[in-house]
Length: 68
Image (cartoon, rainbow, N blue to C red):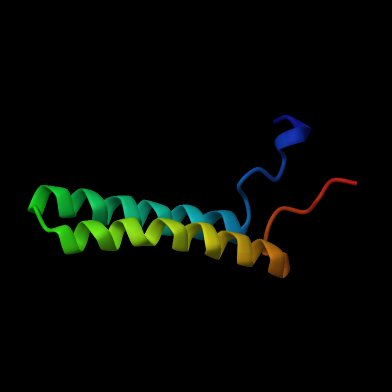
């Protein structure tokens, strides 16, 4: 494996952000299929939550370490 991508995605911050984003997309898709605007907008609301959660966890030190 390339040394440049050694830690690519192997962090708590990355896994949390991706998991919440996938849940958001799943809720959005279910909302569209069920024709339920409430479920759809819950899914949409989860997407910024994913970004915020990933960034906060990265700032707490649970993200990828900076290369020196």
